[in-house]
Length: 212
Image (cartoon, rainbow, N blue to C red):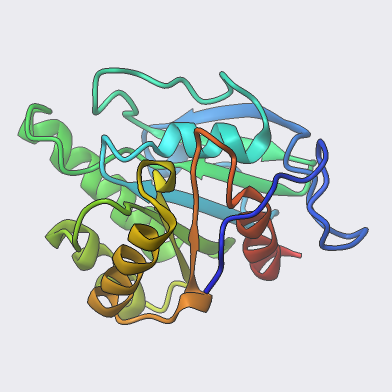
């Protein structure tokens, strides 16, 4: 099992001198159409999850910036593919959240087309991080996404977030249940808490395997 751990020093991953410095990052662009995508000249990691799963908080914790990605109390705020450039070597891509019924269907359909086109055809996409709330069982839309990514051959990493809400024993039980539901091993996911920073180093090490 990949267990939560203490955070590393600012900008350090502990994975060696070639590791990405995730703290050296800035916003690049918001993409609403595939024609607006930046050149595919750097590796990319995309972050996907339900609209209320804490995706923005996770990215902010990863890069040690409180407000790089805006955290909204209104689900469905992200309406584009938001590109961030890390260490001049890697794009982090914040995808629109899914599963929020109050977003108009036309908007949901447009997001879905954009996301599907990006995930299917982007040659520089190295990994899709799928973020799941550890407190709940496997949700249909999360399982559909994971199954589809596997079908199209996209590497993925599951992150079970909000671990601070559970005791260690509860974390282990919930993680085991999610592992079984998604059909993966503990080596294929990370336990994480945006509130405490636990799991940040493990997430960096896991991502570096895809992009370094």
